[in-house]
Length: 311
Length: 258
Image 1 (tube, rainbow over the protein chains, first blue to last red):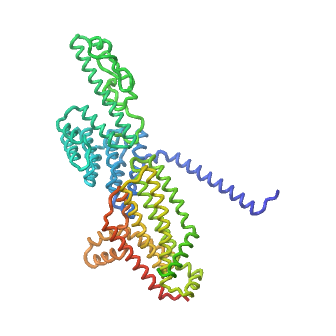
Image 2: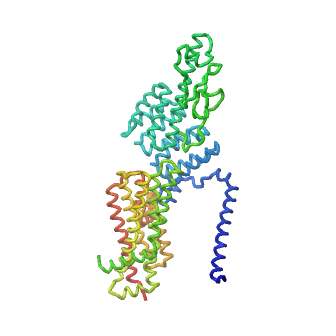
Image 3: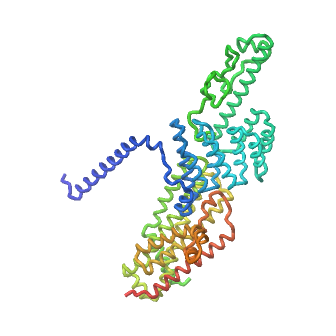
């Protein structure tokens, strides 16, 4: 069958189209492979929120959402890559919050990206505190911002007085959380660290719908349980030693002596291990994130593989 | 409304629909549904904010682009195709032609905005699973966007009454940009003294104030819009567009169409 001139043109055009499309995509893929490292070192070309505000022509809300998403992606990329370089995080959050000072997630989560030490966070508690102060200045009625500031003072600065003050201010806003006055009082008395920390994480769990933050709060609550149980068990071992003059050889010795009932197990169901020097260790530390007790000497607290947020 | 204005307005609307202007709704729907689904994956805690911010920004920008690109051709196209002579040979006055064109274009944009508003509300329902009391302010923001279109349409028509389509587009877009920065311009005027200060103040009050009509970020957070602002913005948009349309009528009346 003979092809018409118009048919030939169509066929050639289709072939050129497909070839060019495939070629263009292949070129991009090749470029991306070479650029992968460069992408990790993202740059912030416009750092002035004022300039960005003008460039947005008044559509600041959308631009703030874009910058917030950029901050989340940047943090996630650096965190996943195991990098401790988070130098763009604070400027990205500053631009975001100045474009939209009411964007609460940027303060709450942003501070929790900034404050913890790497690899969990950027290790910039000062920047986190500045961000939170700016947030409170522009949203004085939001109890969660005072809560987060108190949380920062308690966990990163170990400053009970300032933490108490932040919780007290948060307790005074018109719509607040029932735990705020209790937290303020506990901070003021430095009372029961485990209980206080537990209350903080329960408040975090209750005050958000974000699944990754809730999961993180659950992991911290489990870690607190382990820390508390290991501390108590080690006290029991010490009491046994004081009574008998020697360390127990196994948990059964403690049970026989009436110090414990049954074999104590961690929240994942694995029995606690009694070591020869009287310490208590967890059986599988890899599945109990953030624990600070029950680890082999010198081991660092295990971290979850990847979280959207690190609070 | 004068029936002749009504006919011209209806024909302008029909022509816009025939020009497939409403096809932008497909792009809008794709943009919004894509954003509503994607944002939950790539960001944290801002699903509702993104739907409102992106939805209303898209409604506003799509509408401004349509207003400019159709508005600038409303008069020149009729002259180029020589259909204007047919229209004006009938008992239609020049001012009726201009006003009819204005109503036709704003009508097109109102229909377009209504369709997009339905899209925004559906996307909101998708991410929030229910409507809340504060969503009513989204409707106020949409009303302000329509007011913005009134001004842009009037300006595009004003410039197209004496300038080429390309220059009309440039002038209208420039005024849209300047008007969006009206608050900054006023701030600048306050800081400048002497003749420069007077000049800056004059320009700041002469250019359309689009920044007062932009409450998108505010309503995205569920913040209320003051009743007084709704009233003042309505009066301002009506007066400003009436001014621009009157200018267009004045120029078109004097224009030599031979």
